[in-house]
Amino acid sequence: MPSILPASFPRTRMRRNRVDGWTRRLVAENTLTVDDLIWPVFVIEGENRREPVASMPGVERLTIDLLVEAVGQAGSLGIPCVALFPVVGADKKSDDAAEAYRADNLMNRAIRALKAAVPEVGVLCDVALDPYTSHGHDGILRDGYIQNDETVEVLVRQALAQAEAGADIVAPSDMMDGRIGVLRDRLESQGHQLVRICSYAAKYASAFYGPFRDAVNSGGFLKGDKTTYQMNPANSDEALREVALDLQEGADMVMVKPGLPYLDIIRRVKDEFAVPTFAYHVSGEYAMLRAAAGNGWLNYEKALLETLMGFKRAGSDAILTYGAVDAAKLLRAG
Ligand code: PBG
Image (cartoon, rainbow, N blue to C red; front, side, top):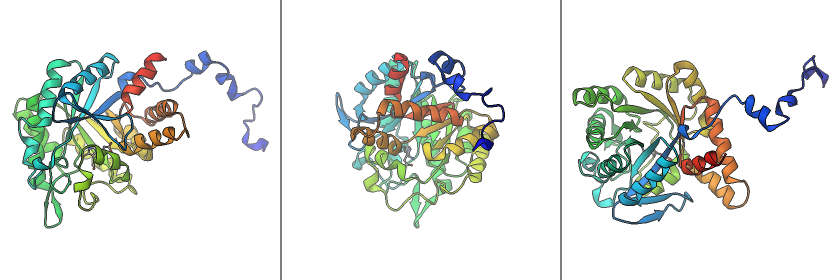
């Protein structure tokens, strides 16, 4: 036993620095603040309507008017940015996903409303075709394969429409090859030099997106899985190649997704590239916390803050989490 204790014991007692609150604060290596939070929100058509998401207790889909209110409140709590996801009706889904780039689609109307009413809160917009395709895939499907280059053209039109509507950050989450470069060039040439690109650079084919697909009503439509474009959970070197390419192509921020099962990836990305690195604490991770708390098996608030601190410790600069508003309130209350 003594061989694993420091030779200097009892001169070294690690517990001295844990003995009271002020010392623990003084020696804390990482901090979590409201500035680290991005709140993902779901928008629906209509007015003055909210719908709970069954698999994500505490999360609601909101019509634009209610969304504007909610984002205003998030902004007053100090949350810097929201991530916007539209719930698209079956009648607007098609094989070519044309609704994705319609100037007046739900997403673009929501962006305009948010930027008009709450300009101080950043708006990050998901760029991918899954809300708009009849088969629920992130791209154009032909011969049983998601077509890469053809999809990139549609994604660029989608992102440009978002930029026109006032999006601050466009965030391609589709995992097509080469899309960041094409998009960056097009944004530059179309007068959107300051629109940031947050690339979902290392996005894994994950079971943890299940509740999200319920929330945006794409799960029921999805045929097959996304393993020919999203990454294999077995891989880590490959994530570094994805990030390197996206940075080279002009991404301003990169994301790792999901979060908790991929903390090692966040750490490797941050160490290797030292660029703004975001983590997505995805729907399934949030649902697990809520489900366990709902059964009385853990304390949601404490487990949420501990989880978010884990992301900071792993090297995340910001975290997308459905618990952003809860966390902001807890952090403000101290
Ligand atoms: C769409 C997209 C997904 C998520 C964010 N953007 C789902 C998917 O790729 O199937 C998941 C987010 C979450 O689970 O919280 N491309």
